[in-house]
Image 1 (tube, one colour):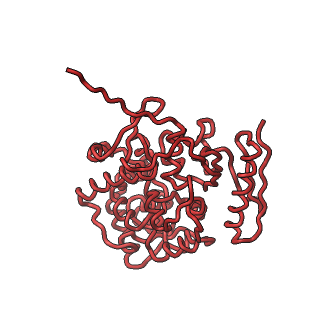
Image 2: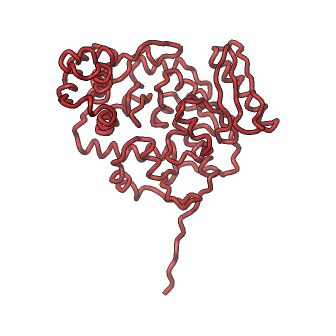
Image 3: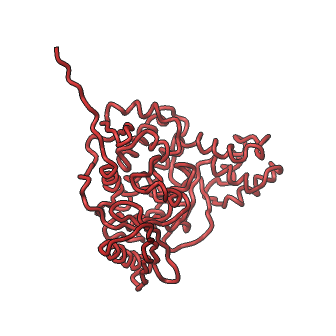
Length: 371
């Protein structure tokens, strides 16, 4: 009696790179709408309020920044503390579904940073007092919330009380913060008031959200290991969600033998597919959405992704950083560019400069490549 042995397919580092670019809409610009793209990406990291505009410009054909501003004003997308405890720009529907799933993580992170200072503070009472402050259409900054809470809990620093309130109570940062070329303090409103009702206590809803998070991560970042899902979401309690959807998925191995999960019909382009130059904003999830970020950034440059550096992808990998200095997009290579690469970086930089300046002529300067 013969037996048939099946071998899990392997994906090279370059194959994983091209898959990531395709999922992130960085292999070619998409004609999809802004709301669809924000949903597909599982949100964009947005603690720097203007950075998502560059992230969407790099992914969408003919992106108009006014379209994102209009979605924010219409409450269809929101700015909220979510994955990894950072501010993300997500659809209102995802905020409602996912924020309860992240609640325990956000609470634990806050306690990890300020447990001693919060000793003796009834956190449930603090959350209730925060909700009372934001009743109706009231908006307040974290500082204002903290100072009001200090009247009842005078021991901790009011700043810590305000940050704790933001972690404990689902709330969003309201416009004008996050609008195109707008500035202003982060003012908060209750998510339930701003975007509608949701049920944060339903166990079945929490389980469904966990399963959705796994599927959505694979759609936007796959093929991926469970460690990548955890690194993107900031959630440790997803093994049950992964197990629940495993029968829906296909598996691969990477060059190190790690198991990678994926949606069966998700794009996995030929590794030799050309990858155009792309300019990414600070803290882009195309890099931060993985535990193993080597599919896009070299290990020696990994620190750039958490330091807020804006980066340039050349042949699908981080090859330079960029800034805007005195009306000039300044590119600093991390490796030697060929003449063709240098020309492509400059050309895409000119397009970025035109976008950032609203059509005015900004200059582009590409520094000499390192020796």
